[in-house]
Image (tube, rainbow, N blue to C red; front, side):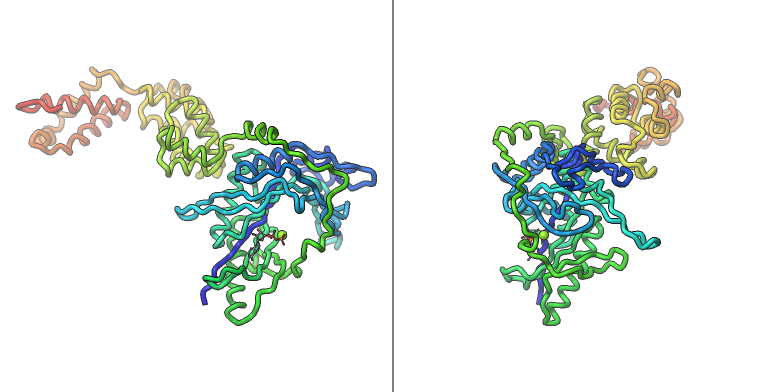
Length: 484
Ligand code: ADP
Ligand code: MG
């Protein structure tokens, strides 16, 4: 029997706001333990939560970007459970009245596109962190992360393979980075997901029983964990057994999933509307205002880059894969006005050198404005492409401006026609047999002459002019009518 894979992801995005969702403490990552705390974060009696407006606006942005309906009246609810990293005894989340519902996100997997339904997006607070010290057999609690704002994005069970699940997660990361609402770094825990997976016989309409793998924190592990589950559940079903509805954890060392507990139901959490927080009213004018402040998103960039900037679909896809690439491209284009050159230099030379030094684009020693200036020097024929490559390597090594490198090295391409003509004449003189060959009809020798002239000028001649002058000179030596 063949089975179809059914996957739905619950993705947590940690927002990059300055302060926490209901408290004034810093929400920044990396402080000493328990530095970012206050009465609300500690759940002290008498303290009251105050909602951070930036969190609501981040949720609206993500909702608009994923074509969700924004709920005009939405509400926070208390989700009750005990854990030492949750001093209040409940997490403030949203339950049956989330801020965004019924959206969609388009993903690309191996050249084909699929649209994945977004069931809901809601706002909630993160919990703190327990640290267990095996040496002293003690556990410590760090509440810095308690109350840091999260958006939880719940997909419909529309994903059909582990690779699609990873592509979906990448699309979420790209989107939150473009929107500037989160750094989306899985390594820092700013992006994590729970993956729900079930199998059903091909052709069956009813979904099978699912298992939920909790807290996966890398793209690789999402795929590995799901692949393992596909194999495990297939074996259970083929053996005539039934998949148990349960909560699993992924052991990334052994690359297996393990059972944590039976699946809890929402009734177990005793959800009820939080009486300390009034419902949030999102007027349409607020949505419009937020929308007007939203940056250009990847799909729109893709369209503009191909239609307005004349780039290929492939190049546009490379640039839009990361917010940082688009920002770099835009800043370089701003200076040089040459989209194709900016894209080529970025995706070939710069990416190559960044890779070699293990830098990401934000650490590039060549700023986009400097790349733009280099392209301008080429386009205005001060230097040629070959010189530019050497200048670029030097810019990368020293962070100097292209103008100063060109000046220091006395680089300047030869554009003087008299000078180029002299070099051409000398090359023709020195190569009589090739000249005969050309005049006898072997037009492919044109490249040979151009190459020789470039060599003779130490690579400094303007290649366009060399080409023109070589053609003119060769034609001049023909007997009979001159060809253009
Ligand atoms: P709960 O609130 O019980 O966790 P939801 O209906 O909100 O359940 O679904 C949680 C996630 O599980 C969603 O991403 C959804 O797409 C996914 N999901 C639901 N049913 C299945 C299933 N049978 N197989 C795989 N994923 C599923
Ligand atoms: Mg769930």
